[in-house]
Image (cartoon, rainbow, N blue to C red; front, side):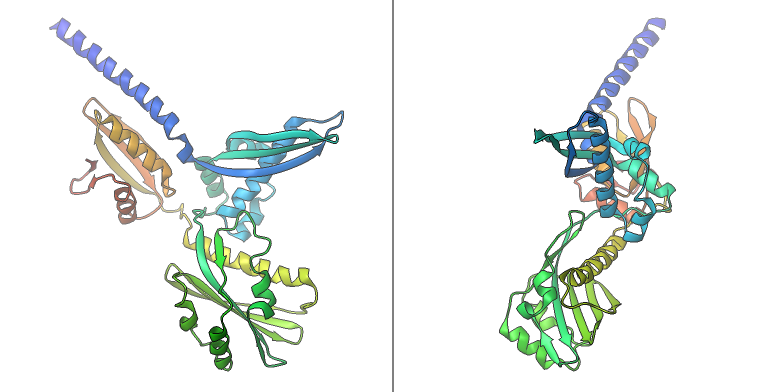
Length: 358
């Protein structure tokens, strides 16, 4: 009897040890799903007697952090944390790479790639009462129309400053990618015909020519030295109206006009980010069971959980040679979790009291 118990304990020990080794292997293979990667951070510093490469690296961390925060938060939240101290930033860095470096004419040039720990970043923002936005890039159609009310003119395409310059000076952290319309005489006729009721016109005749569901119609009303802007936004089937007024506009000053474009782009980015925010005040606990011997499925589950931005945390709650039980904290609804898991080729059976992966 003692010998049987001893052999059972030995087998159990070997099983647990093998599982530990497997989990270690899993952790190295899924680490990339748990990072925010910021690339092409370029810096240059004079190469002098007091040159300190560590300071350059810290500068790269700061620049990368600012770029990341601009990408995953709305503009007013970025202002709250843009001056985060370097010690805090370094604690959020998972790893970094010096992609390229050289010395030219007593100057040091380097390009960095910085990886931030996604969970630590989310936790830091949550403590600052800031919701993270999932950084999803989106292509959309944009139609800028300039109406000169003084001259009663409709300025389109090459006659329109905003059309000509909208895609100039793109920012790396911008998620919205704009598609401008082709210059079309029929469109000019349609818009000029609707001059009097342009605010109510839906532009469907023009939009239908482009195979894209998301769009922004921007109407600029120029009156003396003021511009009133009406933006009709359709994103993910959401319809939004944004109004903006710019006073004392210097129409002959390119920088002044480009600033209007920059402000509008920021507003559109904010609208898109709000649609993709992670509400960290929602912490829905989910318990899932999986057969302990199904190592491949365990690896796939952990990999997919790490990729899901709405998964705040997960851990092994219970573990034996038959069943491994996971506890997951999810910043969303149960239905959304089921949808996200199932679309990643993981079969989740919700008919049991404790959900099962099969």
